[in-house]
Length: 300
Image (cartoon, rainbow, N blue to C red; front, side, top):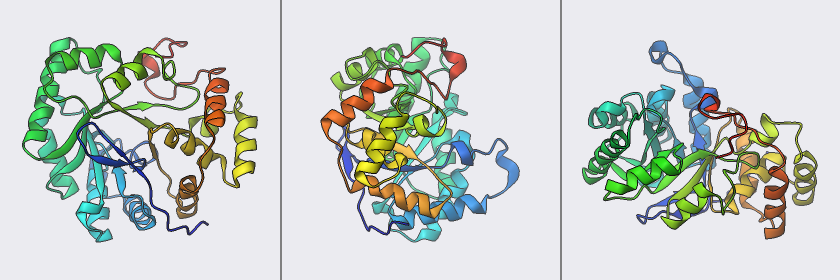
């Protein structure tokens, strides 16, 4: 287990907020379909371990039903609030965002979150639905309940509709992003639109190519790079994001694995290696989330 004492670097968002480039996620494996099951102490302890190791960027969502655990972990960790970067998301109560943020803050035992996201655009049946939801998000920011506001799983049409009436540009778009789902790459419609409007890219499921999508064309390259840098393939996957200024959200219940992931902060891949991973990754398409919303070969 690495005991590196490294600090996770940050990325400055379009509103001046600095977000750590690696975050600890409390969804996916931790997801509770029944919010009434009671407190999951395993998640509380795992989150406290993550905080102890230096994962100060903590990523939650109301739909995960784990905000209460995240709040307890934050309180029990006794780390100063200003050191932490806490994200949560709204979708279950998207039609009542003012109440949704208050409920989330109560569960989190916080006065504000650092980042508040609309979890997906698929609730909307019209552009006006997207626009009214974003106006409510802007009010959350104006009221000081979120330092920064953004979106998740948005495609170009959703961003275009939102920006038509927005007074605050989303600071971030959290999307499934890994070498087998690059959304057309840096010059593709989505990432180029985000770059044009200074909307940062945050990746969930960044380790997909090594955890869910094997075998694949990148298997050999992951192994070669891991050997070259004396790290695991997981750290290579995270570094591919970091070297592109993409905020990576990952998780684990194992302290050793979380500690080892921090080795991704101790080296930098060459631009050629990053580009090669991207190019080879285009040889396979794999989408792990929201599959029902997309055709099988839709890479947008």
